[in-house]
Length: 395
Image (tube, rainbow, N blue to C red; front, side, top):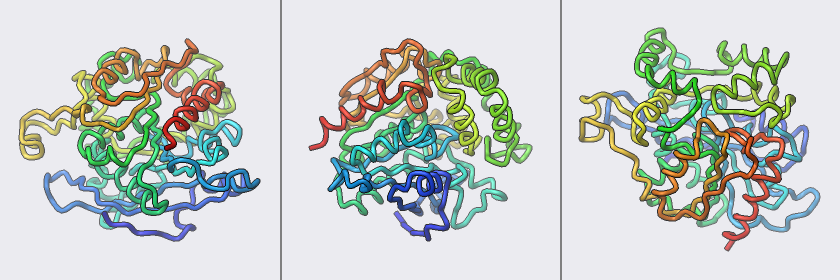
């Protein structure tokens, strides 16, 4: 792995600005340059991608924490999201702040392709389509291991905690399956709304799109669209403006169709804030990969077509991710009203994990996919539970 640090001014994000200006937490933005082979031609020399990730050190002001507690915590966001997601609901209810206030050293990843992690030593994401030839396969194989190694090097710890939401859980399971040596570097992982098997999803939009994911990807890329939901695209700008006008009616409905959502379980204010900061870019290939999971009903690597599969994987069909190799301790958080990460699919995953600590179902019946991070009662129903699990694994 190659690591290249940048000046703080080069990696300021909303996370950075909000933290510094509003909360005055001790903060250090970081950048890491990693190996990431994502050329369409299989087996060529890997390119070098640049990630950013944000850090909130334990709350020294007031001097509550004399030393950092337990192990450093890495936070991994969902699809088309960013590190911002962990603080958007504010200092009283943002998980990033709550962990810091409880003396944990917190690191929030920006996975490649979002607004904060779109640099490359050789490729220009604005001009080179090759930059966008990645999915959660590369996020799990390259990005997350690189961040873990960097955090361990800086903190001089031997293991980390990991909290992932939605695709952030997928990336973790990919890492544990394809690079099982990294299981030894994870003390405990918390997977919120885990996404692996997707054969039982109820969300109408993903179900509809999955049937034509190959054709949709081909059509988008033929128009020169290799990125979706970027900050400058209409797919971000239009929802951002509409949600300022009618957050519950417009964005609440859209959220319900995409992932499941019950009106009022996320405040209208937070809905408007979230939509303004979510949809900050990722690859068309990532969306296509999830479409393949829905259509096939399997948790498997990207289907490149028979010829490319043969070159890349050694077989005409993409291999399944072997989650039995994910031996680090795992806690799953699921919800009864989650249309994207259904209880049936979470139970398929839980039955295959060799070191499952708990398959926790949030007791609130209206809880859904995004409530784990932004929900009205997330502190009581999720975050306090996370702290309890961390306490058990602090030694």
